[in-house]
Image (cartoon, rainbow, N blue to C red; front, top):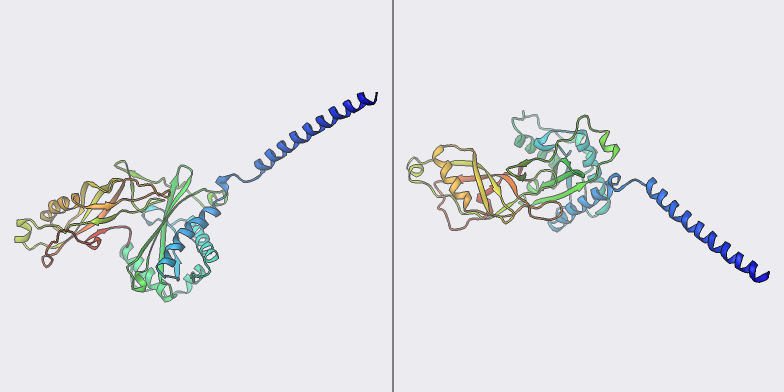
Length: 312
């Protein structure tokens, strides 16, 4: 009987262990279901975006940034943009105490220029003046749009108001929460594609940088007429940095348009990246300057091949 009882006890203990293990696995599964899914946790992603920007600012020894409200593409304001800027400013200040992040609450007390604004570039220039009055060295702007798994964000910054020439760029795709959804009166616009390419500097996509940019050569007619000015061209930049599908957006004279197209076709770019660091095709506007007092050299710096990356 003793042996039989021992056997029964062993079987009972084994059964209890199995029941306990099953309960543990069920409890873990239930707990995981109660936790917010990854799509409900954007704060770590926002912190990582701030970190990407902060590292660049410290490397350039620029320690006083101010972050403007983020906007939808084409500078359309959105309440979510202010919330994102608040979170970015807070996370940047917390993760990098060595930075002197200008509190966003001080913006309303900054001196606002009274001059009437005619376009977005003038508005940005006025924002620079206001940020400078707060002691900022870097003014950060950004935009966002809907992507398949959340929203894409592109941050762009310049230290021009501190007399510098540095540009900073940080990219991210973050999840969207119910709190964020509640701030939207309308569905977010989707990140646009044009000619099978992304628009540069929009919603998690970076901008290309022209690295080999020969100055434009004057045609005989343009030189004879002493034509000068800036031609704005839209160019498709491939992931290998080559330029194609050049279209004229604005030109001071038709005689300069063909010369600008031939010039841009010979440029080579450092291609744009997405938030994962992958090279992607983009469409970007570039400026081609025609000046009679400049003799073209075989290779000019990127300064003569300005990418029109939104106000910089």
